[in-house]
Length: 327
Length: 185
Image (tube, rainbow over all chains, first blue to last red; front, side, top):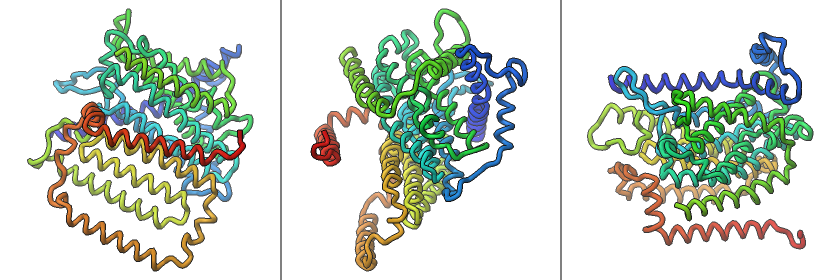
C-alpha cells in the first residue's frame, strides 16, 4: 500500500513536470518574439489571436504538417534519434530540482521535487553535459558539412564552458556545505548567495548562456556562416524538438540561477507564496536572456574560446580561492 | 522508490523494495551487456561509441543501486560526459569510417584469440577467487556522503590523490607539447 502510494506520487510528479516542460516552449516562443519586436520598435506577431497569442499554435501546426526530410547519405537511425537524445537529458535534470518547501497533502508530507538527491547539483552538471550528444549526432548523421561543422563547434564550446560552470558552482557548495539543492536554498534564507558570490554568479550566467547556445554564444547555429548549424538538415517536427530543447535548457539555467544565487523560493519585502516568488524570479532571468539576445552581437569563434579558457576559468578559480579565504 | 537516498536503512531483511531492485538490476545489466556486445559488433565506429556510452550509463545506474549516487554522478560526468565526447570528436575529425572497415591487424586472428582467451581466463579466475562472489558489498557505501568522501580523500588518501593529480598535470603538459609544432610561434 505504502509502496503503491509512493510510486503513484512519483508518477504524478513526473507527469506534471513533463507536461509543464513540454508546454513551456509555447508561451516562450511568443514572448521571445514580442520582446524582440518591441526592442526593435516593431509590434511582433499581431495577426493570429489577440496580440498574436495564438501564433505558437499556428507555428506548431505548420511544423507538424511539414514534410520530414532525411538527406541522402544520412545515417538514418542516428538522424532520427538525435533530437530525442538531445531532449532526454534536459528532462532528466528536472528530476532533482526542488520547486518549494515540503507541503502536506492529506496527512502525507510531499517534497516538491521528484527526488531530492543529496548530490543534486553534481547530478545536474553531469546530466547537462549529455545534451551535447544529441547535437554531435545530429551534426554527424546529417552528412552535411554545415551540420558537421556546427556539431563540432558545439562540442568544443560545451566542453569549454562546462568547466567554468562547474567551478563557479563550487563557491556556492562551499557556502552551503551541501550539494543538495533544497539545502542550498535553505542556506539562503537570510542572505542570498549573490551577495557573497558576485563573481561566481557572473561566471555561471555567462557559462550558462553558452551552455544553452544563445546569443552571444550561438556559434553552433551561426546563420551567417553555417546555414543553421547542426540542425541545418532537419525539418518539421524533428527540428522543433531541437528548438524545444533550447528553450528547456534556457529555463533550466534560469532555474539554477535562482536556486543557487537568488534564494530560490525565499521572497523579500512582499509576503507572496514561495512558489510565486520562485516563478517570478525564474521569469525575470528568462527575460534577461531574451534581452541579451537582442542586445549583444555574436562573438567570433576564437573570441569564444578565449573568453572560456582565459577569462572565465581563471575568474572561477579565483572565486573559489576568495571564498575559501573568507570562510 | 528510495533508491537514491543513501541514508535509508537496508540490507538483511528482505523488503518489497529488494525485489524491485533485482528487477532493476537485471534490466540495467542486460542492457549493459547488450550495449557492450554492440560496441564490438557494430561496423560503424560512431555506432560503437554510442553503444559504449549506453553501456557506461547502465554502469552508472548500477552504482545507484549499490547506494553510491556520488560514484554514479562522477561516472556520468567523467566517462559519459567527457571521455565519450572526446572519442566521438576524434572519430568524426578523422573520418574513420573507411579505415575501420579494413582490419586493424591483417593476419592477427589467432594471436588475438589467444590473448583474448588468456584475458578471459584471468577474469574468471579472479572472479572465482574473490570473496565478493558470496557476499555482496552491502553496506560499503551506505554511510559515504560527499563530505565524508572529501575528508577521506584529503586525509587518509592524500598521497595517492596528489600523485594522481601530478600525473594528470604531466599528461596535460605532455599533450600540449606534442601538439605544438616547432616554430609555430
